[in-house]
Image (cartoon, rainbow, N blue to C red; front, top):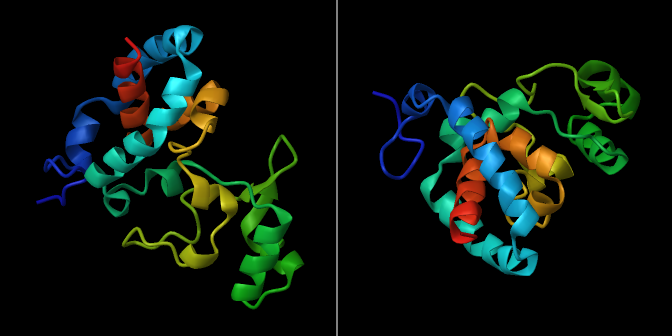
Length: 172
């Protein structure tokens, strides 16, 4: 039997059966409408509680969709810190694990992330890139200021979808 992803006993398999992307696509329109009329200050004040609520119900280690579908940007401090941890020269770290994306940022060469283990634990968790540390941005203004990123993340991250859905419901 699959381990629950949500505190209510739903597993990742159940979520897949719920047609995650379809549900997300249906909510994109509502979220865009919400952003046009929302009291942004009120929404920002809700984020910490919604973030905590989402993560009290979602077990990231049962999901790891972010590590399977998303590549963080590796900024210079991240590269320095992680290459030191791995006892590699920065150039060797870049050559082994990273590539430049279309925006000129370093990202992992392929997904899933090479640092994601079979148990969904991150082998560099304490030294992970800043983008990983901050993801899924559900307790930051990013969720309101960068709607395209939020909508993209909601397609694979149940926490983003949850917070986005609650913001829309609370904004009515």
